[in-house]
Length: 89
Length: 474
Image (cartoon, rainbow over the protein chains, first blue to last red):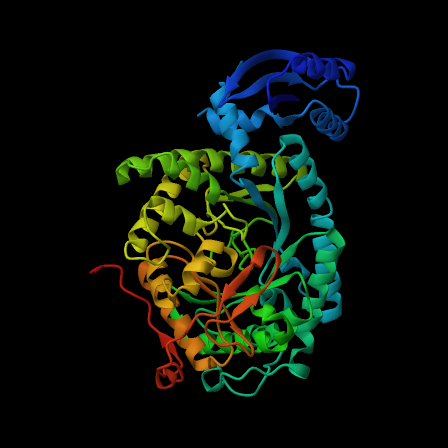
């Protein structure tokens, strides 16, 4: 399954490094990545492929929550289909 | 990137700030094949069929929730109206005499032993599979009552006050049959007794009983869900809830004309409904059952920012109930339907805005201040909304007055060819202006005053109010 992972928080060095390292350690493949500042917040959006992931989806969510707390950002992960359904006719 | 940052931000905001969620995945289960002349054998089959069909319902719900990252609040079950299933086991009338001679008083106790066996079975099955509610302790009596219908209705107060998850509904009117006023009186009696039996909880049991005109047989929302006889054996429906999302969309157009506003609401409704369609497709595939409908209803919860009344306020009304409320609601409901209908080819259920006073904090506040009255709510149900929903009235409201309120609401549904419903709670021991707390999704509400003029002479005539003609529509 492919998912959209969004990282939102106060801009500071090392956010992309921390998140992509977390993905790499769990064999989550990043297909696309972009970064922008929206409404004053650092926003990183990645499209990831979870097919070869070495842990369960629940575990990945937990790990991302923990990481988010550590680096003070909010990390959300949603199935790509949610966005396709809502934004593509 | 496949999606723009703005699209992604919009979706995230809907979930994190605007309370967008999938309110319920509801599995409809046919129980007609469980009927048996031996009530114990029938009840055993009912239990087996439900626990077998819905064995994986909560698991699949949790799976979809985790995968999509979308909250799914409830898992529910709707079954065949129990009077149809229990009919084979419940021969004989609850009381001697025909329907037309029945008084409004509801007899519990011994006469209800049969139906109560089914209520208890449904509760056990619901507990076993871990669903939040199970609807279908129901009877369709818009043309008349079978002996089983009558016994089920008389057992409703006992059934609701001795179970936690079982919900009951009655269809007492339809645009083809008219209004069965004998059934209206029985329903009013059942509401009153259900409330009295749970007086320590504010008459809570009455919140699990809905009286319908033109009841939909594919409604995923409680308390009125049942699995109508026109359905396949098992099916899965989804109800989405997004008043906060619509409110936010309206907020972005503070000075726009109403047609521009309608466009904005339509687009938002499309997105919300597409989410429902995605969930219904996934759930049906994984459960191996037929795809059901997506119910477009805007269903509020007591949480701040999850309110239909707030949408009306955002549109420019000081409070829900102010002059203009009916028109604003008409615009809202119509736009939601138009957006939703394009998003899903299987729209069904109630698909209107819900106006449950206790479940909507801004609605409850408007009622407390006397801006939103029972009469204004009734008017609003004529163009939209599903009916008088979660309304607390004084505990000394008579069965006849309740019958009159129900009959009025049924008349609106029957004459306008739409679904209307009444879920009203005569709160024991409380008078107008006092507050009652139901807790959880049911929220809290002020007891609303009721017109005290008598309708006894009218409602006690009983019989049938004939169905309308479909020409000469004025």
